[in-house]
Length: 510
Image (cartoon, rainbow, N blue to C red; front, side, top):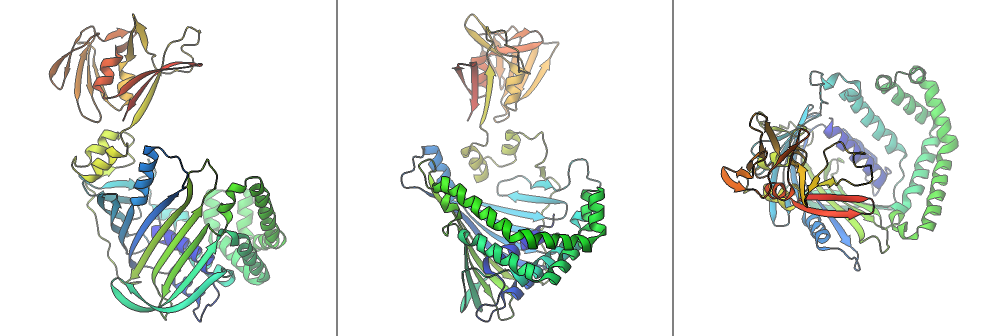
């Protein structure tokens, strides 16, 4: 729920690992981190892109290459407004191949609402679990703003004190463009490779252990701060005792860290080396080629104005793996930090509830204009694809074992399938008129209306008469229809398949 706080805490943690906290080139990195972690409101402009690098000898089929091209062509640009702890809005554009998709997202303490170009109304995702709408999230201790604020400030302050710097870090005075304005800033450039992980962690633990009084005080403070939350999650006697005796608990935690911290890191490193010795192709995962790089721009007062980051994940190098690496690039610019900000609101009175379990692929398609890029994108990416398998009867005495739906039947070489099961498997609406022995089907995707009558070869599709080769029949309370006709009506492809363990019909909608 605390979107802004959560994101800033993740960012602060990343920067602590990446840049360390010791002064570099006269710039107090730790102080800049503390200031970033206590930001209350801001505007930011950013971009985000992912690139998957394919191995030169990779054997990808047409569909796989299309997916890779789709991912590599995607770029997202955003303008974010953070009003306070609860209220955030994001306006942006997603560029996907030759398509341009605008969106507007608003997040508060209760829900996230998103409006996408071509949509008839916003789409809403509630943060409140089903059946708990009457509760106030602010009343839950685990979500208390005070708890989150305390944790974030204490977390950053403590680790700023102890985190070592990475191998590559430097500071340079430069001029940088932020929101179209030229600023004189210091650029903190840092790189952190996966190969540094264990040495960095050992350095952190040794510093924490050396600061016995400070570490014990911090641990006690954390236990006290989160005491009520811990008891809410687990009311066992052990937890009650831990919280009640916070000083003793902190001392025990410190003693364990002192005796086992570095040792645990050493053991984990040796175990990983043994593992990689047996799987040498996976070595790139923990090499310098898996790394994070950042350019962090701060002014003379250590306020953050811009950040450029790049994450590279080196992948296993073997014939089975078709990719060499994944690269994620992000840039963020900041302005109006800790100044009054108002989010861009959305009218959600007619919103579509994304958590509604009755929504079908057709419902989602109809939520967007049929000429919109989003509608076309959903169709192109296989949003409506669906696969259903129907097992055929076997002469092995086990034909009903493990199946909770009627099985197809074959008469004189003609296959009939259970209408309701098949139609509803493809999200069609099925109505049965017992007095007329008539079935009305509405296709989920096309909204085509099909009328069938038991024991009749006459049918109607969108009001037009259609002749069937075989009439639907009623067998033990289940309406069966000819496979060929129902597959055609629902726009699915039917295929008979066999295996040593049985035979079945596959139905697929693309």
